[in-house]
Image 1 (tube, rainbow, N blue to C red):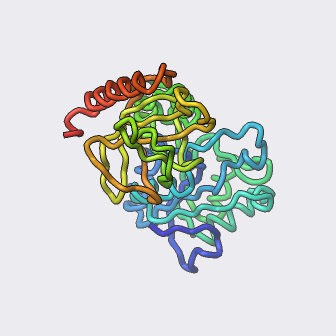
Image 2 (cartoon, one colour; image 1 turned 60 degrees about the vertical axis):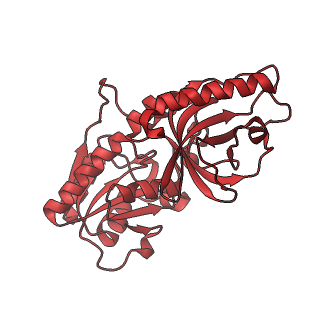
Image 3 (tube, rainbow, N blue to C red; image 1 turned 135 degrees about the vertical axis):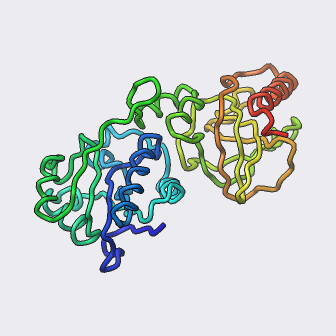
Length: 313
């Protein structure tokens, strides 16, 4: 996938393209259906399937008090779009100058000059230009003038009939329901980070863990113990995952993500890994001493094996 972070990086003569525009936070199941349709249109009409997105949620600039935490990092977004087969992604800086563009300037600079758009797909509530002054009707009008077709995409519902949204996924993650969040994402929720040295408490208990550095990429679910996977070097290993500050011990003020890989011993210090969450096993608890904690961890590992099933064999 070709990846651009400014319009100046897009080569002259790029396209013609089929374009979709949005935040794509999480690249969830709704986004995936839109992108699948984009790829179909691109192949059918001989257009380059292209995603236009932003380096931050526009609310972080326009109404920071209302801006939710992102589900994924920019790097994760880029990787997920590439996996889906998008030919090009343009991730534009959403700054004051960008926010002050008129709808006409937005269309002319991005869709006409840079991408030579022949087909544009947007959500039915799409707004663009200064103070959201442009809507789908104006985009279609400008498309007629500039020579591209506009299609408004309806909402994508889950199997239960509720609209798939990043907001709903954040709610599920906050509740620890990573299985339901994964169904809406179309994949397991993932955090990515560098493995750092911890206090070696897990090793002393017989369950060594890979501890992720502070502020990993991706949204961390609610505190608790999870069944999931640790990914490194293109391979995935079944793991028991702990999220929280381990209240059994004193002096652990910050939330940590730790993964105990089942039946494997690996030196992961300094390496970037991905931790995927399949199902929550239990909430975070305080135990009376390390013996009780060790016994519970052994029970947790057994439950992780059960949840992951034959994949752990």
